[in-house]
Length: 209
Image (cartoon, rainbow, N blue to C red; front, top):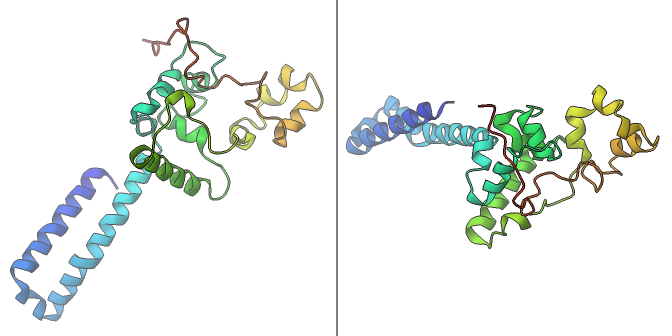
């Protein structure tokens, strides 16, 4: 449900509640009781569910992830003009949806991955507002990055299955698929965001303008 519709719904509910408070005699009739039940129970509950659904959807956007100033360097890394930067290469070439880039790569694609990601977001909020947030360059993943998240898109792709590097050693491709050799391990795609280690030589893509 669009945000404007939710706002209208909340205002409508508040207006009806105001009428019932100002004229409690309305609730003496059966219809009035039904109306009161809807106004004080159903409409607030519906507004809450609709609002949560809207915000959960918005929390998947790249803009939402980068709205926290701690994440600003990670947003800038998406525009680094160097194909060795994994996040930037995916973002700039639309290998992931640009408007959901962070969520696409950092969501667990198991059955309850979306729920796990949302609870992880709540943990971020707790640390940011009630704990001591780390410096951007010191941010770490809660658990090692699982190749499953890469294979969700790349498994079966010709560039992945027949890539020279992946097939130089017969054991490499099976190890990647079994998650025993990480895609982001040293010597592979280990330059992801690299925040804190850019130096002065990093150039940024202008977005094609």
